[in-house]
Image 1: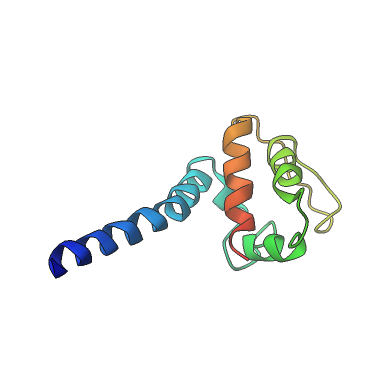
Image 2: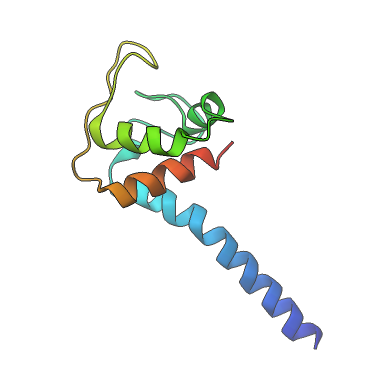
Length: 103
């Protein structure tokens, strides 16, 4: 019985960790990590800094999803974020939700 319970707990932990990994994998596949990293500034801000800036903003995921797709400028300094037409709306929202979950 203990082995079954332990197996269920380990499986549940793996399933709960999967969305975080899957969205980081999505960020890598869409080339987001060329300019961003989770915890340090590269060309663009760190994802954790973005999450901190928008913490408490209930519309952050939608705002960030639009920025992911259409780009933006002036929020993080002089370097603009280019548009990313290769990212569809659903993936943009997944990415934005993942970023906001890093806080």
